[in-house]
Amino acid sequence: MADFNKAIVKTLVHEGGAKFTDDPTDRGGATKYGISQRAYPNVDIRNLTEQQARDIYKRDYWDRIRADEITSQAIAENIFDTAVNMGVRTASRLAQVALDIEPADGIIGSQSLKIINAADESSFIANYTIAKIARYTYICNRNKSQKKYLLGWINRALGGVA
Image (cartoon, rainbow, N blue to C red; front, side):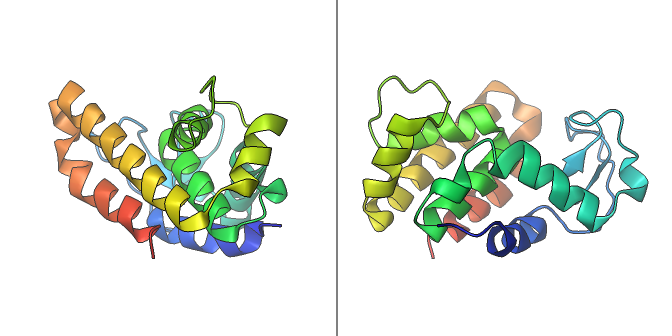
């Protein structure tokens, strides 16, 4: 089964680590360890510790995609990192789309887990990466202010391919 402690290390790097940011074009607002003020209005983002961020990621992302039940570490890490970046529902729906799971309702249930665990790892990651890049492109086409993030998002998506 997949290991959260291995996955979180990579995601924390993607999310900028302990660096506090407050970019006016970032829709999340003030952010540290990738935890945004918009998503967590009652959290003191500036003083957030790495352990607090890890606890949030485990509870609100890893557990919600049922990653402990995914047999492939690479697949679990991909879905988890995407959940952190795009939201649990979107990441789960894209995984379902990549595997032709109907309905693609954005909820990782028993049926989705069975198909995810039977999937060829390389094929899943390739299809999932394409789905993520398509989603990032859609976001930028819908909101031109987000274009400055596109290259970083694509690099993040492609980083999961290795």
